[in-house]
Image (cartoon, rainbow over all chains, first blue to last red; front, side):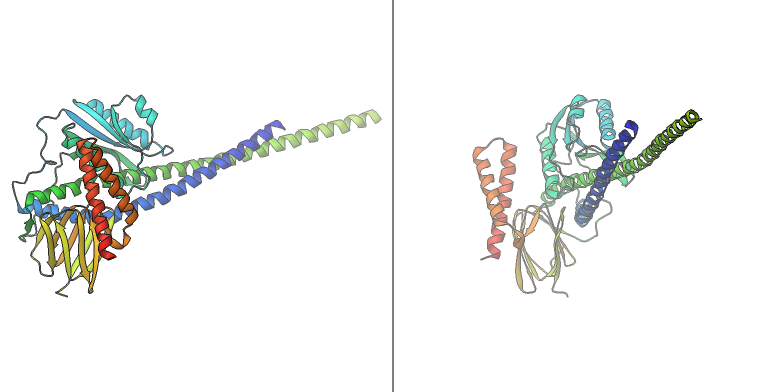
Length: 288
Length: 136
């Protein structure tokens, strides 16, 4: 029967889709694990930097730094949008784009957008946002060098006076099932001393301000790196969730189609039997 | 072990080195600083260069590119933008990036690029120096 053949083809194609979604899920799981382990790798560095920052801010006053001093007037703001590298991860990308759109339309001053990630070249172009640069080569498990490149670019934007504020817009990773669109201000930076210094008297070489300059460089690189890793963790877990859901629904679709196939087969057999029985009884009548 | 320092080099990519050492020569902003156990608490700006440290009587080298040094309670921590141990340095790659940086400096496209090129030149030179110090 033509109907049965159609159902069989359908089952075949759904099965191959199921395989793809399962494979993508596995890939997302392993990438998520790798991203999380690089998050762990940077933790000692982040903690120590914060410690040095605490000592520095706690022990001297009147420090000045070009990354901390705000520009006199805020005329142009730069938003850095962290999107994924591809789709198939639920509402991850569109949600953050929507959030950025709202942010931008609410902002009273001129803005420029820096996009990190390969996703949505066309979608972002169609949304008529003012994109000034795209970092399309961000890998799925970003290394420190990639974060450095982005951080250096953002610093130069701020220092050249082209932009007066730099904000990072990304999906904050809360749990494997939940990410939340959020934004933080990168520049001008407002580093905080979490606690007072240890009370020790430190020698600053050559002086506190030049140390602060170096600390700030590290601090900013750090921040960009951690946001990048956060966003990537979110992307992988969103994809994981989406692919799990897709694999599950292919499963139920296949069982539904199986049922249909069986019904169609049964119906075909029933018709055949009733045809034979009908034919046989017609012959019997003739003989009589 | 009062005569030993707990020595760490940490970058955003991970901890590069974590050892007990007796002496370190670190490139700080105003020259090289030699550090031994019992050094006064110090926080200093690092510049690109080679750090030499002695662990169990053996000299080791690592290339650094900028960062901060923190020394307190016989704990010496170098927080660096990037860091590589000399034995992990790929000389051919360092030389390639050196010539690339030199070319860019000659071309002088824009001043921001120039600064970045100079930085990467310093980094490449530091890597080469660390390599040659290890293999001399």
